Image (cartoon, rainbow, N blue to C red; front, side, top):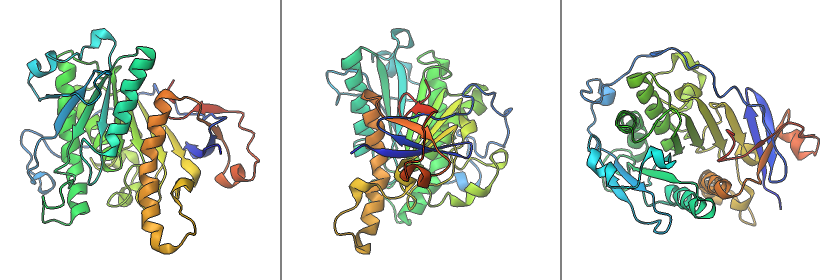
Length: 346
């Protein structure tokens, strides 16, 4: 059965199927709000506010470049040029940087980012297109180890998002300043759940430090809990909290779970998949409310598999509809169409 998806852009709902699709996206080459449009809350070299007082370990940056050995990586370090030089990472070899950021209770070896990392390396084998896949492992701050902290786990991880994002932003600036990447053309940050908000903070930090904007951020079911309050704040008033479209030149968002993800339309393009609530493949038969939480966890994670699939399969598309119900009733003409996933910005 065809995968049915639904997309929202600028308040316009768009249904998506694996057969047809398009979306009328906002101009991806818009000028960003003049910097700084809100104050930088913390300085990585000297955090002082209460929000920034928690000491967290520096995320690990794991670089994968070899499609023939997809599990081999080189750990690279901030301000250590030699660790980058010994890898195959080089902007002149055509390698685009795909920066993958996991979410709550995850680490660098979790289902995501591994599924998306492997899909990019497989695409290199299939097409010869080169990628520098950088996995950002912030597992300790994301409570990947349940014994790592005595804090209420999710609340602790959510409070670490902004600080981890700022640190990643500094790392992107390091790569850019040393000509390992041009962040305005080569950098694509992909964050899942809490990782999507880390991505937004990283994009803003890089912009704040350099005046230059990261090319693209993809938010895979950005986390809702602990961020819903910010859904009602205008973008120009947002502090460094959650992802929004001014963090980058182009932002694409994918919604699959209302319980764990955010319903906020925060991208140039927002895809609402199967109504953005419960994914059909996650609903066991017979359904009962005791499995509701399982369904939402499954639906939340489902987005990463869909995006991974899109890297080597461009058959999923979106079509513009006034509502998801209109799509379900078969009344969408789908005259405007767009590719879903990896190539939606093309």
